[in-house]
Length: 174
Image (tube, rainbow, N blue to C red; front, side):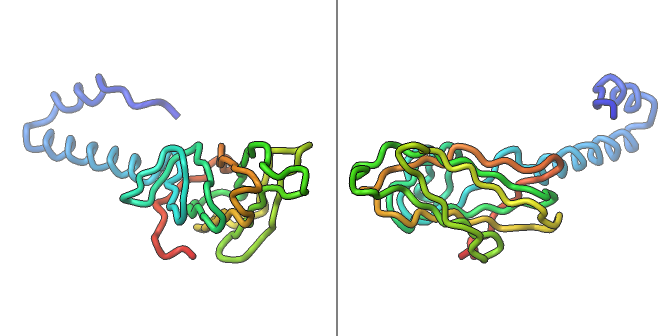
């Protein structure tokens, strides 16, 4: 597929009368705006709870990387056209590591709990993924289920399969 060439549009605009040129220009602008709006390059993360990192506390929105600060803090996101989603969470060394307490996270896909994953001193990174998904719209929720004193962790990456698209998350995800 060839990329759009501005010279081609200019040549086309000069070859038609002014009314047709305006209609064509408006159509091209509408097409560009539609394609930009429908394909989010980064996930929109809706937040519930306390977080550190790139957070807009007034809108309850955040971007990666995002530090979970308190238990029961949740990140919600929406995506479509992807048969797979992956998440990476990197934990700091737990404050109470000697007592066996580690950071734990619950993963929910379409409001169904898929798994609970935890870190430990030998493995401070959680690599989570769900595969075999339909190409429909899906919602992912990641919730910290451990106490803050068990260690802090950052959501550092979210990845979709080729062709997958991030969507605007609705506020009714729970």
